[in-house]
Length: 176
Image (cartoon, rainbow, N blue to C red; front, side, top):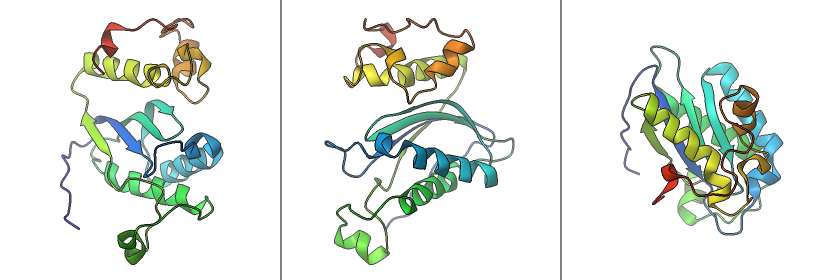
């Protein structure tokens, strides 16, 4: 497989999208939310990073991380999180011949999408996007109804009102 080159920015703040390999009808991430949290916690202990915002949906997740100063290795962290989570889940997924040859599980898409956040406005727009995502995908009518989101932490900190995103489309989400 071709080595995928990623941009490095030590101590950066990044937006990520990570998907399951089989998305349609898959609820694995919320069905096994405790195992996913444990995988994150395990990796964070050995490879620290801050989770600034997160939403876990049934078949994918979005999050914003800030890496420690001098550290740009988010790819290793994602690999470890995916592997740790996969080890906690029973082997029931379909596995392609290429994955089988490599000894891989078939839970996750091999790659993920990352975006280096450039400034406070970029961070704000992506935090809004993360928190709006369960409404966008039709899982809930109001942002506060989704339990697997940092939105509740933001409400408790006074960043958002509890009724933010109460079902009306937001300008920031136009075209997404």
